[in-house]
Image (cartoon, rainbow, N blue to C red; front, top):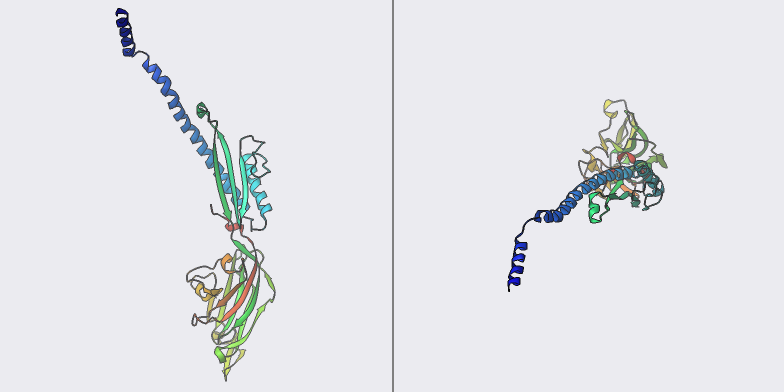
Length: 330
């Protein structure tokens, strides 16, 4: 009985002894605190590396996307890869393959969808304190996509119908880099010969074939209108509905009655593309209104009722990527 009492007393003393508890708690808590602090540091490093990779991916996508027109993927891919190589200081040559030369676990992919070029980069960022938990690296990944608008390089206009009492001329205009005045590369002209049947006449395109636009900074179509039915420098005489043009030196016959342009938001609504009227207040984009994706049908209204357009033609274009306006889309 005495031995039992002594044993119980010893256990009671052991349970009540608080000496050494701080050391035990510290041994348990400190590794957790160190892991949390280390995780914060390692994730901060990973975030900084992700930011760096995003900048590289963005620039590589813009570099390759500036030349990508949907048909030259090999060339655009090479440009994007070259930029990645220069920034990473290595020679990646195979898609989605670790960069053996750097030995940093970098992987990249250059891909394309339609006319959009995409660059994806992944990297395993080594950790420091997170190694306590057997986490040796944190993988970060980024993606960037770029797209260039299509820029017409060659255009073919084919007149299909013209009507009305007014003389009308559509001109293809380009502005060269550094120039202050536009160059007229081609015209499509309508000359009314009679006012019968709402106005009928002849029309023709000059040149009749393809127009090579060359290098330019702005492309526009302009419609010049003279209400009396003859071109500038001429005066119209109408007898029994027949229109006859004769030379004139009068000031009123030396200027057009109205000028409409595709790049003038104030007159954009005069153009119809594939049967749909262009909204008021827009500047007609090259890609949307000049036939880069398919042959388009244009119709112009010279100023009368919108339900009866006056000048009809088809336009087809050979287009390339306009790297000047390449933009990130992702």
